[in-house]
Length: 204
Image 1 (tube, rainbow, N blue to C red):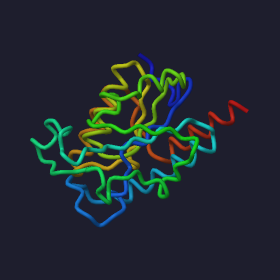
Image 2: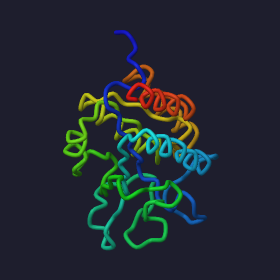
Image 3: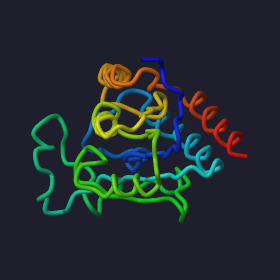
Image 4: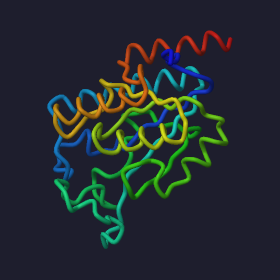
């Protein structure tokens, strides 16, 4: 099959779990690769480009109840308690990412943005075809969201320098796995910002 264009049809930006913990010197319960904070801060460029091009932006927040009833099997692996309701690092990084009143917001209890949420209903309403992914963590929530988007027949694009993994090796392995599913899916911030700008010009 020929490689698909970077953006097919109507795009939507998914800002996955960019929460205050990414910008605070606190133990968030999940390991971070070197350069993690720089990558997450860089995601603001993509958010700004989407706002300028009037592309819908959906912010996601992983959040768990104080009694920990909804963690399920999340604490069986390498992750400690994280994204607990009321913890200083749990709120969405609204100021850092310039979250606006017109943006959409969905909270989630599991890794994938599709699992047990209203995401699919919202995307259908927005008539989305291409999903652009930035956020945390490359090898966990971003990867599993990408896979579910792929299996729901969306064109998925992940911005490699605007996501951060639990380690450099896990980050790169996840990017490789996503590229395996859709060739041309892994892009830099420069490339996706240019592609977003091109859609704005084409729509003018």
